[in-house]
Length: 107
Image (tube, rainbow, N blue to C red; front, side, top):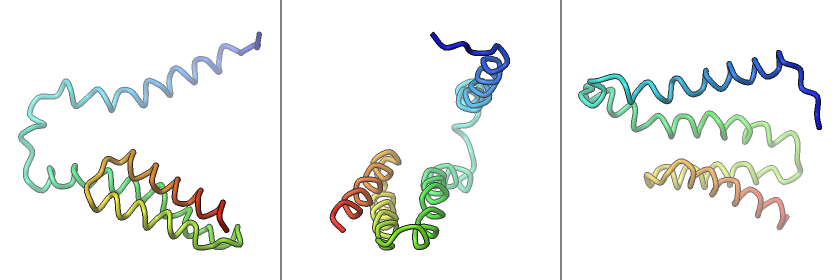
């Protein structure tokens, strides 16, 4: 069907290994459940920090690209609200995307 060169497959394989290895390491390292309090708190806040790194830069640059400049801010506010209420990170991202989509569709 599609002719794929072998080096591209090797790159895809190496990149997939690079993303899988950090996900599997915590299951095989003993003692991660006995982290200090500060490290445990950092691990709990990590999804919120990742969410901010994914959404907030786009919300700042959204002022320059569209006429509906507040759509990004409303999406960011929705993500903040759900993240602050300790919702799942996926729920926060979906809520942010949904609020932004609805805002862009209405205006």
